Length: 51
Image (tube, rainbow, N blue to C red; front, side):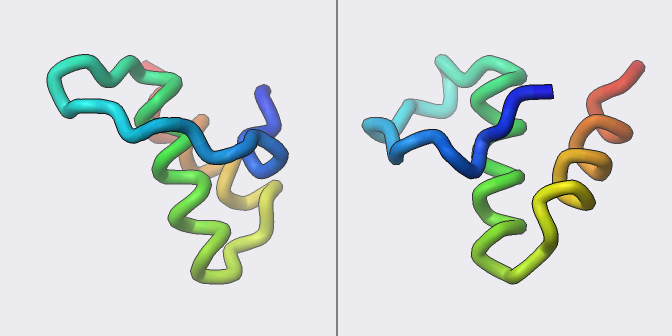
């Protein structure tokens, strides 16, 4: 799994051009702001996006 916590902030993306990886990055970064541990954030998003 990609470690999104170490990615520098990107330019904002428009909603119509978001890819799954972009959505995962946004969710993981938001969880990090609320103090969710990285390992748990990755597990939550991986479980959610696993079909």
